[in-house]
Image (cartoon, rainbow, N blue to C red):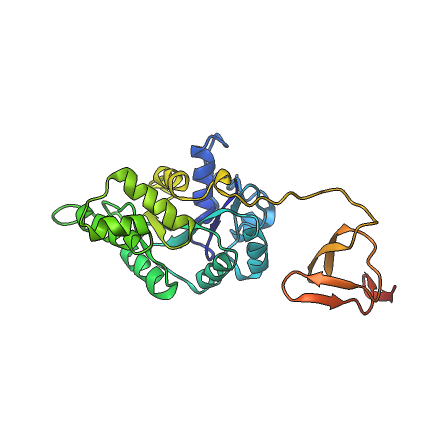
Length: 301
């Protein structure tokens, strides 16, 4: 199963991924992106990644770069994902690059849940970030857990408003799930398993986004996030459409390739002039000429 942490840069994706790897037993120690020990985060193994503080490389758990220069890499990664985690900053909320990532996830129909990070910072306001999700991203989103303190401050006056948040979550999910909607109209109070099942159905269909909060740097909220990934997002055995890829190369087969800028990765060889190549998005494209690039020279084949 592939999952991804996605949003704009400096929102704590790599820090969160480091905790996910630790709590799932993949690594034995936690290191920071720009820690004093000089080791760096596990996802930032390249020297350039440590200098810039961004993730370029990735593997099964994809911590995609939030920098605008790597937008195409994020989009290519989304093609193979069956779930994602949208990471937002509790202070900054929805940023301009978040809008781009949101459009990409919508284009490839990737179910996701949201993690509002950096609640330990002064000025943290997860409610404002949630409201930005609703207004700027047009998401039907609601909290499935809430913090008891923000930015080092104390708790809520008069206690944590759990009842109001639960009612809001039920109403949002009822608007997206038929079963829970009928229970809501009948004024029946859903049980915890019934509510979780409704959240899962709505999340898989991209009709609802569960929102969790925490601070990855302080190791708060990471475990509930992992539980939410298992409870609310898509698994492999839920997907009935499976496509088998044949890795073998056969020159007798039609040409298949992936073109990126001036580079082409071919799956089958022998592309000739005057042939038609099927473009998966726009249709057939006629091959007018073939050229070979070599440093500063271009030769026509």
